[in-house]
Amino acid sequence: MEQPEASLAIQVLPQSTDGDNVIRIVDKVIDYIKSTGLNSFVGPFETTIEGDFDKLMEIAVECQRICIKEGVPGLLTYIKMAYNPKAGVWSIDKKTAKHHE
Image (tube, rainbow, N blue to C red):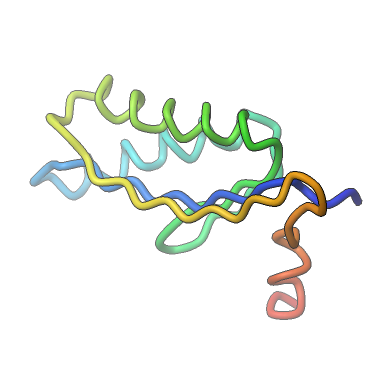
C-alpha cells in the first residue's frame, strides 16, 4: 500500500445541551467521512482519515457544515495533521495494527 501524503485526525463537538443530539450529529459526520472512500479509523475521541492533503481539507470543512446544517449554533473542532507530500506519512495501520491483533 502506498503511503498517504497526509493524515488528519478530527474531533467535532457540536454545541448542544442535548447529549443524544450531539451523538446523532457526530454520527452524521462519521457517516460522511466513511462515504468519502478514504481509509479512516473511528476512535473514541476522534476520527483519523488519510489521503490527499486537499481532499482532507475539503472533508474538514464539510464536517463543520454538516454540524451547522443540523441546527447547532456552533461547534468546537480539534484537528491534528501530519503532512509530507514527498515522502508520505505513516499509515493508520502502520501506527496502530499491532495494538489491534
